[in-house]
Image (cartoon, rainbow, N blue to C red):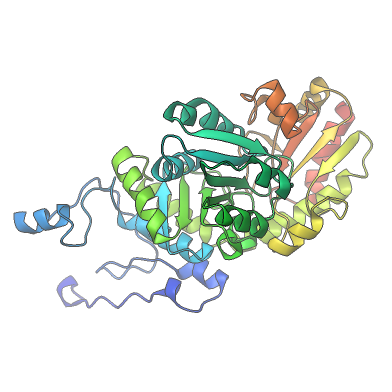
Length: 405
């Protein structure tokens, strides 16, 4: 069939129809070109060509829809955005160059000088650095609260509070915030709720359906799932997302077409992977708490976890990340990590390969000693992102670590 005789089939709006999660993860958001490709195409182009000067003017003037420049829009990126919006149940998603870029873009587009943010004390270390060192320069203030204590959230509200920021489950101690309760409190006080859903992904938790206004992700983690690319995404209502889009378009914190395509491929297996990660992590948490040399295991799938019931309520499963304290100090934790042979020593997580790190000197290393103490990050704490290897092989590797302490 010649190209001139090819009739492009209408794209089914999977994201707008009543399809199950697994179908949306495979089908939603795809843009099919005139070539009729079955797989998602990559559009590695910086700019787009117009048929005339008049068309170019109409595109730039907003009178006609269409691509202008890949910092603004790109078909590959838009396909990923549509799929993420469908999976999270949001009106619109905006992709960013990293998870931190997604958070920065959200804050700078929706907050102004004099505004106040309430943030869970249990968040990724770089978020604390972003808030304390850089957002503070713009006149935006931040107060950190215990994510598990709704009274602490309520007591910290000021007349200038405009945003609640919650990471649940938290990194690295698996503390949970009650999304419904936090959202109700925030909305009663005129504030937006932003939930970092990186650890669960929409396969296990959908914060927008529980009252949150905005969801952010480091797509680098489970959305990709194989440690290949860096990226982020913000999902929410069109009103707020238009502001986020405006910042990313102007500020340039946009996602590359290739990375968007990789994330699209990751989403196709997201649900399967998250359930498998969760099964492995639960089995490993139950095993670890029985081992000599392990003082404490942090994983919401354990019945003794103080928020186990909440985790069962707002998540489909408990995720693939757990942390544990070994008997001893930082040196003991380092000996444990160094003795492992198969598990990768890296600060990243959400990979099919198991990864191990010492949060106090890596992911949360830039936090002050006081901030780490407040967040419960001890020197003997180790974080494990449980991959999809054989659970018995993971146990054998961890036994090497136990023998070293």
